[in-house]
Image (cartoon, rainbow, N blue to C red):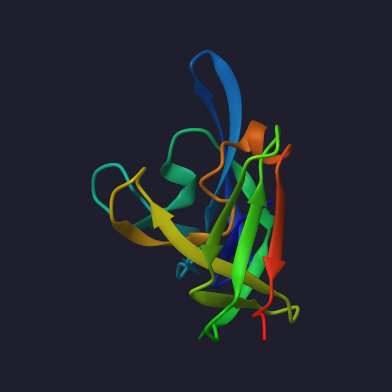
Length: 143
């Protein structure tokens, strides 16, 4: 699972996309007074709601827990190698620090040739089926 949250839990949903069953994970942002998992509802209200009220809710599952974030030192990058040999390099802007001590690189999100629209986890914008065939490597600064 490529999901992390401040609680270490994700809500699990099964939905139909173009006639195919898909499983998705949404970070549980916090727990309600009665123990209900709260997630950000992204389609209409953009606010915290009980995860169980959204369509396709299956349950909750453990995911990586964010313990902090740190800016990346200059020079760190991520190299993505696609099937067929094409490669892409993106600079690492920050690191998401997880409670187990690991760090996940955050890179600029690009809209084709347009401006940077934000930061995403390295490889997050690669289609799931295609991601398995890609190689994503962290490259340290070169001296």
